[in-house]
Amino acid sequence: MLTLPDGRGNYVFPTNLNGADLTSANLTNAEVTRTQLEQAASLIDATMPDGRKYEDWFKDNEGRGEDGENSGPS
Image (cartoon, rainbow, N blue to C red; front, top):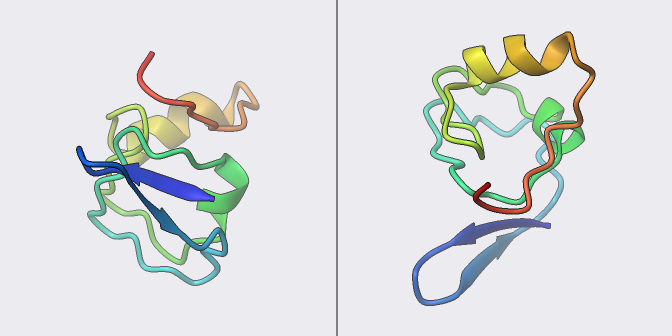
């Protein structure tokens, strides 16, 4: 489940991101796994769950083998 906080509760979106265009999407604080994100067709310029841009997030996580999960602000 991809959950995005809205200040009044949560919006819940389908977990299948296969082919999704998330270009420039703001995923800050979204609960999403790296596996789910890898299904997307594009994450160019997207803001990742931890607030970093996709390109920086990918470089940092690629070498460490992290799963990219985020359970909220750290």
